[in-house]
Image (cartoon, rainbow, N blue to C red; front, side, top):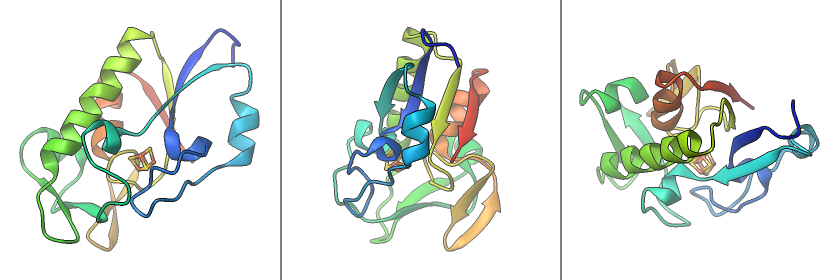
Length: 146
Ligand code: SF4
């Protein structure tokens, strides 16, 4: 990885306590891996206006692609629809990526925002991407999850 490369990383992976439960998911190897790169840490759910802690959310009956295309909603465990927050966070993350010529991102696996390849649909893991991961992927950005 080039030292000049700017890379977006899910903020919880580099120690920010931004998860729904108020915790981080710091990956120490990741901190070593991105050392020297310009790391742009972002939490799409906070960028979308949600707080910490917040009720756990999941994509209802679909994937991030379905959410972006208007076929599915993101719902939290209180039954509130938070789709607009997730879409707003995804758009802000894409904006950050485009403004900084980001080609690759490292995101947190299985999250309804950041997950790539597998995401939670209620309590079940299904094939598909989170809302932010899908939007970045759609714009040609390489997504890696840890
Ligand atoms: S939205 Fe992404 S960055 Fe924010 S807490 Fe969830 S997985 Fe981490």
